[in-house]
Length: 153
Image (cartoon, helix red, strand yellow):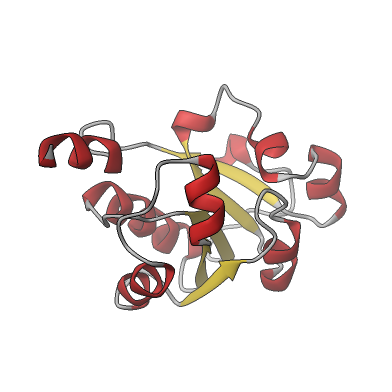
């Protein structure tokens, strides 16, 4: 786990501010697994989830089934989440991230070999400048919103 952090950020027993983001449509146990990992990493700190707007999700992904308000309400009810914010910046996540000033951004490891920084609208230098680290956690391969949609058809 420590290989995901620059020296000085990760220390045993430190409470961390953790940020993760996504659409979180058709909330399922893959989402729960991600949020549970965020909670564990926070170590008594705070977990903030940034939720994509309907407009962003409908442009970049499939149209959402659940509205933004419904997705926010579900996330707010999750015991692994402390705060829910809306990613008003769309493809540029910097505004949402800076509103939280996290120690760590947690991402599923399905992004490990993709350009996550570019997708989110920032650079590794920007992260370093703000002392923010990225940590990849296991992606739950046995469930997805897409797969749930396919079951329903």
